Amino acid sequence: MNEEILARVRRIAATLFDVPAAKITAETSPATMEAWDSVQQLNLVLELEQSFGVKLEPEEIDELRSIGDAVRLIEAKRVG
Image (cartoon, rainbow, N blue to C red; front, side):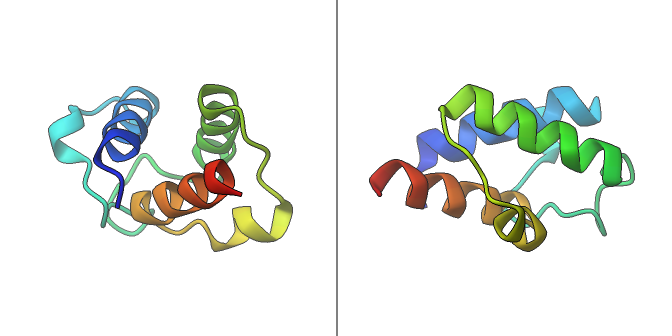
């Protein structure tokens, strides 16, 4: 997992969820983060797309279930 991308995604998530970045890990998910609801999921996707210059397809968004998933999606988009 690309540590630079993980760090950027953690900062984005920390800002959106209003928690310290240290509380965000690759395993952080809606089940472990109370503030991660459907609205914040959309906000996270929009911020990731804007920050990394990628476009996530609806089926990819459905598969985004953790911070680690977000990092892997971005890695795949940036390579491809």
